[in-house]
Image (cartoon, rainbow, N blue to C red; front, side):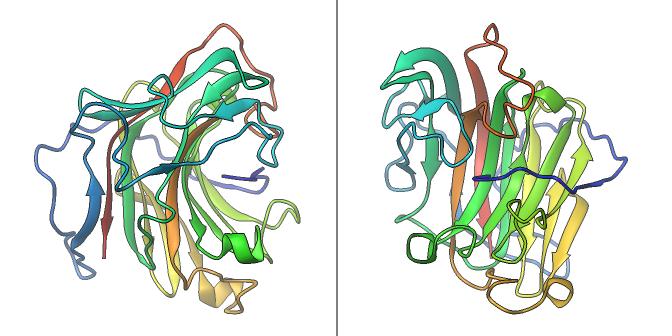
Length: 273
């Protein structure tokens, strides 16, 4: 997501409806590329997020996108488990010099993956100014910086364009600063009222993007190039979940100050390899 202004997107005319909740956790995927479950959070224990799996990124510095929120740490108003769901809640309130609060959870320092299927079942916030994301960053980010470390946006959504979700990759060669990022989008008409499963299938050769098991976009190493600048996706990545408020993309049409608080509800996150 950060810092991401998606400009060129592929739009496929596919409208999807919500799915019923899973009763059991699938221990493997099916088909020729079957994989086993290697990590998951089902968000079954009420309270704060599991500190063995998640940490917080905090601050109110705009995050390179002129965002308006302050990301807090271990504050249940912004991140908590309730009724079997992770709740990330953005609120309109004065805090540490910002006018909004939210949370940004990540697995950095806890768990990383190279390749696999990464999926999350979520219901998104509603309203102009919201910018939720489920995404990944390379573990070498602190050493090489963005976008050299690579970024995979499993799902992004901006509230002023409610019926569309986006999936994107960023690298040194392909990123929004150069207006060369590679991404796709898909119409999903009920993202703020129903849960949908957002996923990537990531291999050494390509990354496929899915909503409810419908593939809508792919990027291929053979097409983009195999240098590290073109394809930094052969290294460990960690996962992030957050809601931003406003920003260069999320705030393009302003922020509706009457809609808060807004939440992203996450039913589960699962990784298969």
